[in-house]
Structures are given as C-alpha cells and as structure tokens.
Length: 156
Ligand SMILES: [Zn+2]
Image (tube, rainbow, N blue to C red):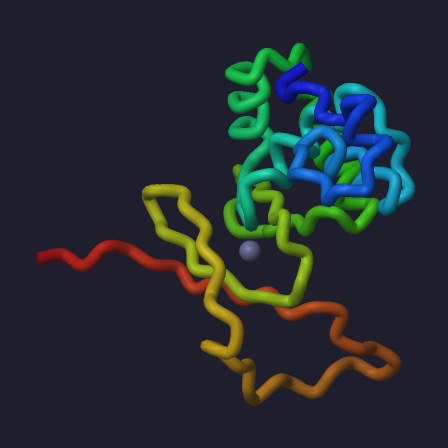
C-alpha cells in the first residue's frame, strides 16, 4: 500500500476531528462517485487527488505508482483513469493528439499549455471570458467550452 492505513481503531471510536488521510479520502471519493473502492482504485485515487489540482497523463500516473510501490500496469492505469472520468471524478483535456491529460479539477476552467515542455496550467478564475460565440446548430446547446492558450518561451 502506498499509504499507511489511517483508520486506526482509536480514531474510529473517538469524536475528534479526523486528520487528512489519502487512503480514507480516496475511498470516500470513490464511493461518492459510485465506484467500488478496490485496492487499485484507492491507491490510484490516493496518488491523483492528494496533491491539489493537477493535470497528468496515464504515463505520469503510472510512473508515480511505480515509485509508490503500487503494483499496477500502464493499461490498468489507463482504464482506471477512464473509469474515473466516466464517473465524473476527472476531466479529459484534448490538447495534444498524442497525449491525453486528465484534470483532477472538473469545474469549468481554461488552460495554458506550454509547448515543448508538455506543461498544462490552469488559467485563474475570472481571468478570461469567451465572447462572440457562433450561432449554435438548431436543437444544440453548449456542453462545455475548452480553451487552450498555447505558450512558448520568449526568445531573448
Ligand atoms: Zn485544469
């Protein structure tokens, strides 16, 4: 297990506030999303959601799992990320055709993408608005607007 089991007998029976615990939090998050908290899902959700808002690929999460001694294949990581996405826990970012980024922040927000460094950053809330939208085809509504502003370092 990548994280120690935080649910000690003492903690369960006391009324004191519980300390942050990636394993317990991941289990709760999975149950809330309607997913069975299997060992692998708990371990991967623990890695994904214990470090704030992030954007990462299946390969990157697999690398973290290897470091954390979570025995899991890249294919399983990929499948699990898509299960999390279907359950509304993650959002897929279509930035590069060769790479799929998964965003732990599922709220409506836009992104900077640093070309050449494969880095995705959130655009701060309220820093951007989208104007001049086209007329939508009949019977359609906007599900989501994805804006990616691609950056490169200034040449000095
Ligand atoms: Zn984001």
